[in-house]
Image 1: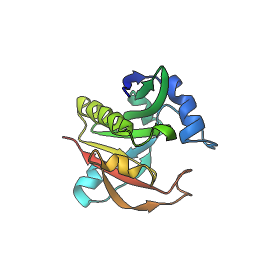
Image 2: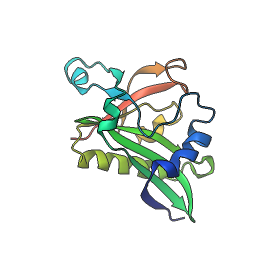
Image 3: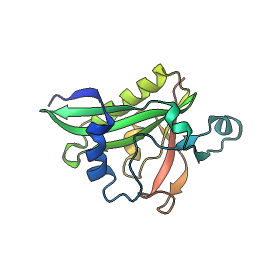
Image 4: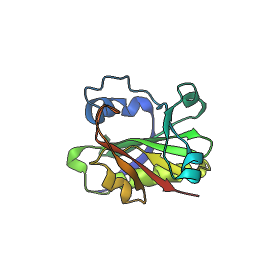
Length: 165
């Protein structure tokens, strides 16, 4: 089967996130996340620090991607700078019946290419345990342990990064 990958919009993928990825989410689904990754701490101390920057999230424009089969979107992802040299992959979701066909790899490659174009050094994410293999397949590395529910609404999650420059 041949798929069409294209740049999409938040409005186009919102329902997929709301009904599939973050079903019954308590917090509001935004086009951007306020979470940020501090690359300086990673480079100097091999320590990951994720913080919230509610005002800063509006400084960078996110990009949304979708995969379509026969005019129906079957997979999505987004990405956005979280500061001048780091980029976050967020919201990877493939409909269950389409998983295992390389769709997540293609969406993640699009995300990585966009991060490179935006001159970022690192791309990072907070995948669920079930999604980590997709990220690892394109070169992300899990950092630290699993973060169980309580810190995030859906878990367990981990932090995964990939050096890109």
